[in-house]
Image 1 (cartoon, rainbow, N blue to C red):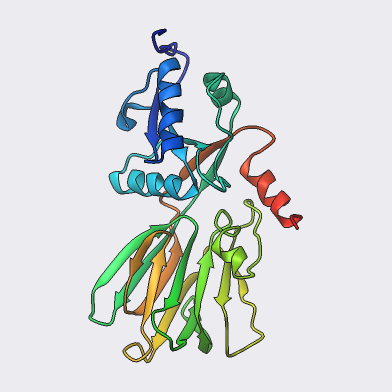
Image 2 (cartoon, one colour; image 1 turned 180 degrees about the vertical axis):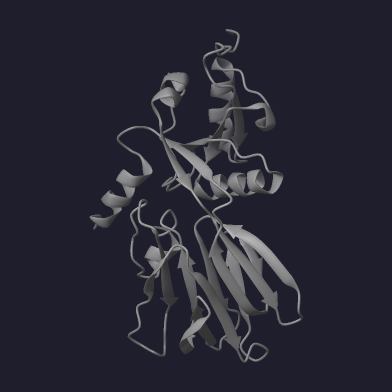
Length: 265
């Protein structure tokens, strides 16, 4: 077996993070036969093998550790909207030609019925969801002004442009171009007002939800993959202090995929 390739001084040091699926682990073995990898803290670029969910997991770990590096995902999952096509060959050349996209996460501050305060970033969306058979009753304020006294619904979410093609789209929310300085506020199965379809908000907006009858109609708040149960209120704002960088092959970059998704049947 040939020794793994050592990148030249002009090429970036690479780290490898791998989902615990058979197909991702097989891909990792193939890459390790060709290239040498370092620990994420020593890397210039992090290669992620898995699906969109695993990529989000890795980004959250990097934010928590304060170890943000450009990330190049290769799809070894299902949908792979945030990933590039998997291939072993020409990885340094693909990285050199990749387009970079900078993303700012949301910051959720949730206060529970018991008074606990939980903060968590969200790259795709923050969603509020009813916990029981009863609908949720939620008041909505934007920049300190109440815009809706009571939304009766299964839930409501706030999505970033990068996350607008995920849960937001499934809830019939709008797809946002990456360059749009906007957030999508989208109801989930609204009962009253029945015909309210949501709103487009400036990305600098501060969005606050107050849960009505929180003890009787419990609501959870979910920031990407982190859930907080029994919330009384939730505050959401863009966190410009954090910049995530995703790398994509030319011709299949994230902004191109967002446009293609709008014409998908």
